[in-house]
Image 1: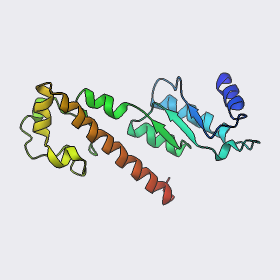
Image 2: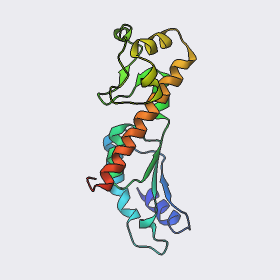
Image 3: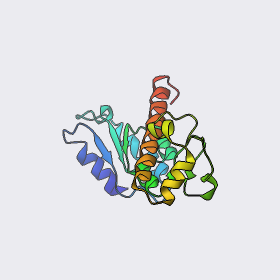
Image 4: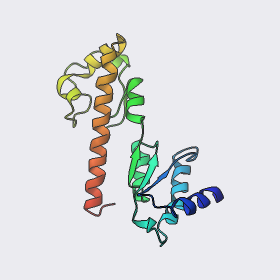
Length: 170
């Protein structure tokens, strides 16, 4: 914590447009929350550089729970390879939880969208059975379609969070 405090003090004394938080963020979601609970007030202190008015970016975090926990603690932007990385391994993000599309139970899911509420190109044109087939046949397009869907899912989550912020729900 001492090094993070020194880092915040030094970096916020420089004329940056915003600040990024990265590196070792703990060994789990609870430790990340604890780190942000401790660290975010450091950015709220009055300074010559007005650091409390500058955006705070969290590096490499993008599962839904961690995003929501970070936003309520003052994180403004995030980035991560999470939606595309899990797509490469056949994990599809949905509003009802993630699914492993390579599972045999999806082999006969004809006419079933990946996510009922999604309007991405993948969900509009393909069903679970077809994506299951593409993954099982090792077709490269399977990863592209899954990634396209997962990115849309994350975009929808972020739009929902933005809306909640605008309506003072967060």
